[in-house]
Length: 187
Ligand SMILES: [Zn+2]
Image 1 (spheres, rainbow, N blue to C red):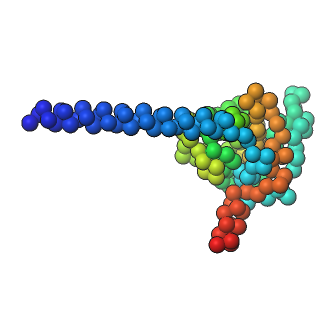
Image 2: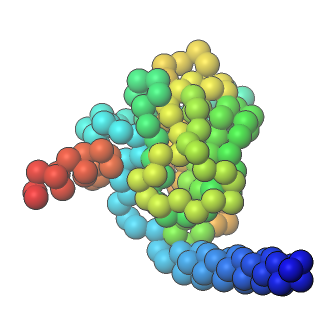
Image 3: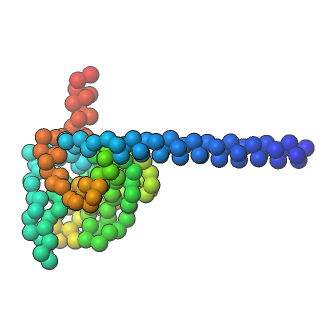
């Protein structure tokens, strides 16, 4: 009686290991495909309810310590959902220096999207795959934004690590929340 049960258990373990391996391979293929893709020229605005006309191109503005602003600030009420602009893999979730609570996602073409000053995080963990529009955090003022109004600091980095101006990707765009409304209206 004990032996068949043991055999069954061994089979179950072997099958689930094989399943895991298959999932890992699929994940890898998906990730490799993503790295081959190009980052779209227009990306959805990652903060719910913020339209392009609300955005200010603050790229390059002087900051203390001789720094320059390597992104744009998207102002919104505390706890407004922040959504991943692209598909990708969460490569960091946690506290990171001036950024406070930060999520970074490696997306199409190996570009890194940097979401900072978050009040709170989505449910994903580092290493998880995200789809465009998934909530990855909530607007706040953590890090060096503690004395400013709540906003998302949004950065886009080339695979080389060079920052590019996110405003150019957003100026003709809409938030995910509005795209969903328009799709519903069209039905
Ligand atoms: Zn900023």
